Structure formats: structure tokens, C-alpha cells
Image: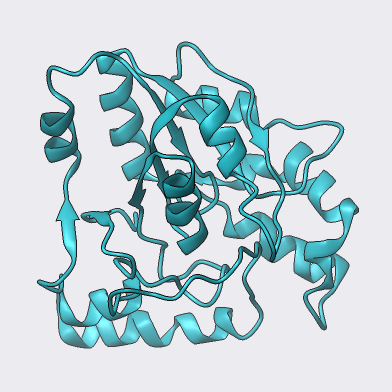
Length: 239
């Protein structure tokens, strides 16, 4: 990539970062490896000390294994949902981040603004690969639940999911990994996510956590560092 273009693209992210913050919280677990954010990777290329894996290589690794249950986080994993979160901040708390703790924001996001979320290419590729294998696909999000939601139908439509399970809204906590019980309950073997908590939640449930890169212009700040737990990171998955 042209260096001048890359620097321009990276510098344009800072305006967004000043009005954004992490949407969800998980207990902190010390890193075992350096890790690199998608912004750093844009500047330096793919670091050699990260365990990179492609969709094709995942398919090869699963070759010969019977169909299984696999799980996906939603925000920044299969959907670029920053437009809804940006709108929520402007409407409910333009001067701080309290909107993330307000039920009225989550009701708007889950029940109306999901339609502004963009499906990520990596989500399309992974879901297509797993459906071809006959795997069961589950979505487990750290969002706060609402009495209504269009997320299940939206994911079904944009990814062409044949046997759609209702989205699981696990909520978030700074003291416990809220996704772990659902990963375990549904016997999920692989769980894809962009956050540190996704990787640890999967491991605590006895599943393998695979990292999806968070887009550099996501409103979920700071941008997570890929590979901090020695996990496999899907190549070019920021898109």
C-alpha cells in the first residue's frame, strides 16, 4: 500500500477516536504476547510473530471433522456497526459515553439502527465456509438485550444463513466473562471475535478463540491488539 495514502488513512481515524470509546467491557487478562492493532498492521504489514491463518487454512484444518457448532461475536467481527454507535452518542450523550449504559440507546440499536450496520467481507467468507461444512452457527454478542430486536433477521438476510439461531445477547461485565456460559452450553468448538474478551471467553468454555481484526476506523476504542494471547488471527479480517 502507498505509504502516503496509508498515513493519510491512519491520521483520519483520530477525529473519530476522540468521540469514541470501548462499547463493552470484560475482565482484564494480562497479555502473553506483544500483539498489534490493525492501525499498526496497516503501517508495518503483517508481523511475523503473529499466528496468521486464512479462511482456506481454517477449512483445511477442519477437513475430515464432522459438522460442529461455531460461534461469532457481532460488532466488529461480522458487522461494522460503528454508524449506529456514532448516532447513539450524538443523540443520547454527545458530551460523554453514558449512552452505552442507557437502555434507550440499546433499544434503538437492536431494534432499528442495525440496518445501518455493514456486513464485513470476512464474515461472509467464514460463514459461507462453515455452512458448506454443515456447521451450526451461533451469534453471541456483549450488547445489552432489548425487548425487541432485528439483529437476528438482519444477520440471516445479509449472510444467507439457512438454519438461523436467535442471537444471544449476553451483556457485558467487568467482573465475569458473560459469553462463556453460552459458548459452553451450545457446545461451540470455534468462536470468532475481535476483542480480548472473546478469546478468553472461548478458552474458558473449552473452545478455540480465533481473532478477527477490528477495523481501524471502528468507534470501539482503543483498537484491540491482535495476537496478544498467542491466538490465531485471520488474515485481512479488518474488512
